[in-house]
Length: 124
Image (cartoon, rainbow, N blue to C red; front, side, top):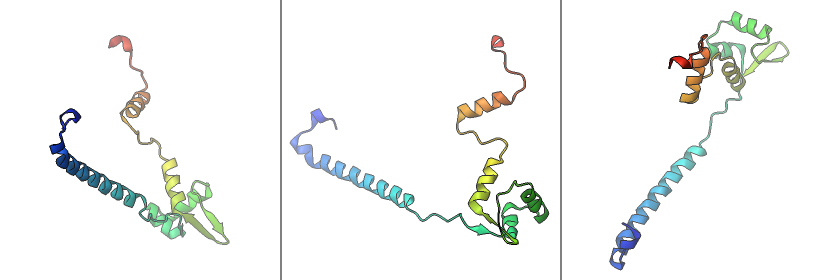
């Protein structure tokens, strides 16, 4: 309904529609807030070498080789090595060769940059 066409007789239906809309908005807000305040899993958990190898699906010898080259972030306590899962995830993301493009423009730019020969705009 438009404002110009409202009459006193239309008031109960308009108020009812507004109450329904407000109830829908309240439901959406409570859903968003409940998702926002969900308890997130703590990923700053120390792992042993064997747990890290199973997490990475990597042989133990390869893991020790990468630790020796200082590729994998580890903490050494005495004779034991410990690795935090969140640091391991960040290491995996940082070692990605081609980061995933965020949108269509970024994807298009990465495709154009990957070609050795640049397209000639005169041919278009």
